[in-house]
Every structure is written in C-alpha cells, then in structure tokens.
Amino acid sequence: MIVIQSPRLQLIQFQMMDAQEVFGCITPAIAKFMPWEPPSWSERECLGMASLEDADSVSPELGLWLKESAHGQGFGREVVAALVEWGHATLGKGSFVYPVAVQNAASRRIAEKLHGEIIGNRTNPKYDSIVYRIPFYESPYSS
Image 1 (cartoon, rainbow, N blue to C red):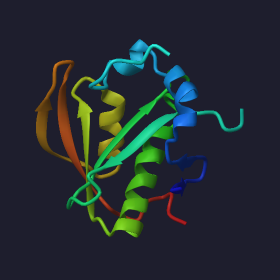
Image 2: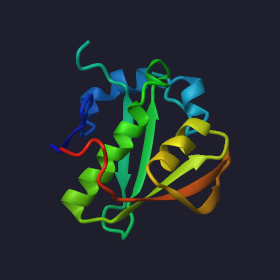
Image 3: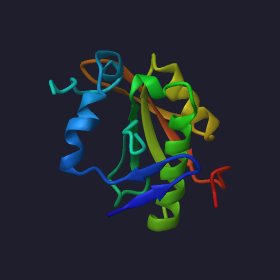
Image 4: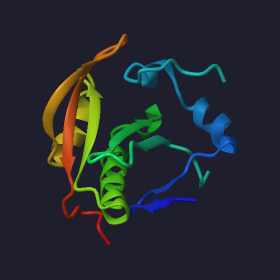
C-alpha cells in the first residue's frame, strides 16, 4: 500500500472498505467542482481524496477534493505538495498537471502557491477548467 506523509497528513491508497466514509463526505458544494456527481451513499478521519493519474506520462495529473469542514486550513496545498514530492522522489517526474475549475479560487491558489503556470483549458459538462503545470521544487514539506 502506498503511504505519503506530510507534516499533518497521511495520504493512503483508497480501498473499497473506505468507500462509505469517503463518499459520505461528498456534499453538493464539494461536487460542484468535480466532473462527476456525488454518490448517494476520529483520528483517522477522512478529509477527502487525492489522485495521481497517468503515472507513466511525462507529467502525471493530480486531483483533489476535501470535505467542506477541512476547507481553509491549508490541507489542499499540503496534499498537492506531498503528491508532487512523492511523484518526483518515487516516479522521477519533474512536473505535474493540475486541472481546476475556473471558478474554484481556492484550488487555483493552491496551484499558484506551488509555482504552477497555466498551460491550457478544458471544458466538461459541469464547468470550464484551467490546466496548470506544477513543477517539482524543494517544498516546505520536504523532510
């Protein structure tokens, strides 16, 4: 199982036994900036989900959602920075693609604070996206 650590978070590979807790966190407000609709259904509290897709590509794609109660605490930037660091150290990748909804200012700030630059746009049925390229750099979360 893949485990990625940051100062405050432990990112673990999604397992089906986590589905009920994870999907229970997805509200309509969270799903607003996801290309799919929400499903109808402590210490290890699930704050959300992150993804690293197309690991064999030159710049794998990152994705993230956090439940509403976790917003505004810096977790998003911490997760994306940890994924970038892990992807560089483990996969040897120098950059990552991070698409975010045009209207999702918080996710856009994540990309910009991590030195992301706009490389394109995407359109899907729910919203338009800006696509950022986030380069690897020595992050403040490096050990």
